[in-house]
Image (cartoon, rainbow, N blue to C red; front, side, top):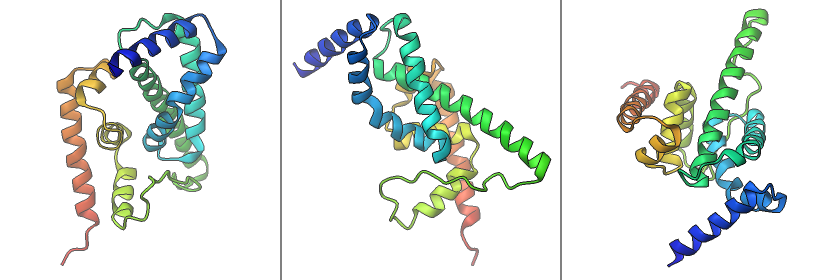
Length: 189
């Protein structure tokens, strides 16, 4: 019964959103902002760019609400937009960092603070965090979305409009890369 109530509430909210109701948009933000911030923080791995991605995500949601076709949940749709915005920001940051490195020969990690999870006191976090930082963005993305955000491969396939098998292969390779990086960090006896 609660599933029916939630569905009715979401449909009501969507109707108000499509009519450009600003109060409904604030309700949407209130419902999903915390989980969006958690996901984007983990995907981006730097504080400085996280707020831009979140703001751009909400701007895109507002802009494209009239074209939302209700083929997935609003949360899945927002997730898709956030992932796209994160990818765009990552590409932009990499280009900017490369230009700086080329021009002034700077270290790409200088001045960039990382986003840590709530349980940052865990002593294993440093090894995992360092390994995650060294992963290619696409590998880090799939690991964050599955293991830290708790999405299923099918949910991601729907959100990213990719084949389930493709994502399973990406996940397998990303885990393999992460394991290799962590093992390289271990002191050899």
